[in-house]
Image (cartoon, rainbow, N blue to C red; front, side, top):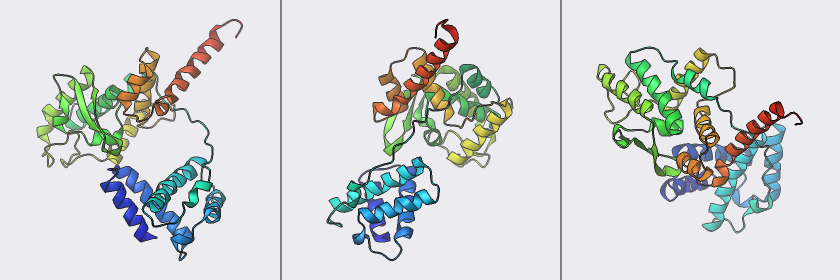
Length: 290
């Protein structure tokens, strides 16, 4: 099993140019399936084996979303093995993906976003960096992983755009507002107080090294607690807020899709459900015969 996993992961890296996050998830899911198979050979896997695997996942109370993700990993894996001639048939074609409940993204209203962005009050390098992080995430609507990868040369202060590397190593250029650019300038202006070991990265830790995804999330969660915002929000909620606020103010869906870097318009359409839910709420409260 491990030999085939290695071949598949190498295919993802070399041919598909998949992101580090995607490769990690596939590796975890496939190793989990390998543990289920034990000493049994991959060639003996058929739809009955896969059904037993799904039954075991359900018996361990995995959520529908987790099961669907593991199944998606197996679909790609077996499609690769069949196409490359390592298997005579593709056993997973007979397995249906469980239907998922639509989960609406959690977002903040404009007032809470401003409250969160303004919460770093320290004028030291760390405080200015944290303000710049929050401003950038909301202004450009980028993912935490994209923020981490930002280099100084990726920011065009004159044109007001930044270059980011998204999922699948796809590059895109997105606009960024003047308040975010001003926050970045202010932070970079004081950065010489830290001995930067990474001269290219924008966002550094106190050791002068590029911040990690986990560090960014820890920083944002710290200010979420400071603000005392009641909603169950995450760092990704700033991206959700960015998209929802744009649509609320008349932006068209296709433009928001481009800004978010979504491959499919269907991924972006989830935000129209959010705005429609809000419209319904306003209607129910305001209309005398709702």
